[in-house]
Length: 266
Image 1: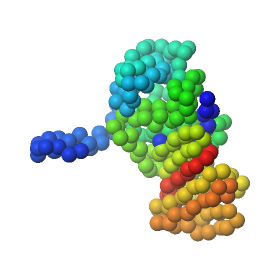
Image 2: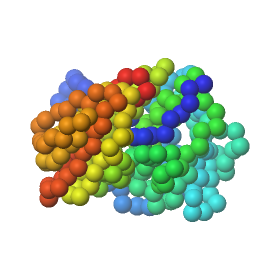
Image 3: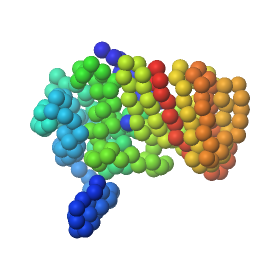
Image 4: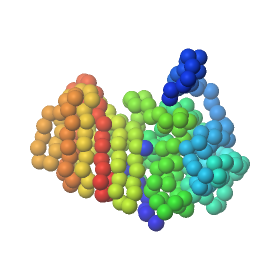
């Protein structure tokens, strides 16, 4: 069984009336302002999730409220689900968070992946998880599939980018976009923002896989390998495996970039 690694950080229609209807349906829903109970959120997530699985997918997911004794679990099989009050001792993955933070994820203010992003496995996170039993022969992707797709009610797994949707990880505001890993070969992508006085990574923080950093806004500094350079908007930088890659900002304007990584160990 593949060991799950910490997240060190994933229409054309026939007539005019139908076309208008289709476009309306594709517009993202306005942000919900109500506060919902755990079972309501889990039911809605489950209704969306079963449309993203096939008939062979079977899993049991536990959900706890960290600020009360409330819990529930869901059984998935044959593109159907059953929501049951209370927890179960036999599950694939279990999640725990406060009611407020579950609502934050439910409303699209922050993704589950962002909520679980860590630089190290000891970093505190607002959405905790426990993996008891693999769903397939790839436990890492089992977890990533649920984390990226279960908690997202949109059909195309919308990830909102921006400071208000991010958390500090590795020293900067981060939003994981897509992660996957098969037979040791992985792909990672994330959005980052570095505000004035912030620094992402420390000298000696290296990775055994190649990376790219695509600067989309701002200007700052980077140490890549042994070189210190100025980096700015509309530039992209390749980071060879096992190289230092430290980014920092001394200016008033934030630095925003997209992080890509791939290959063995990613």
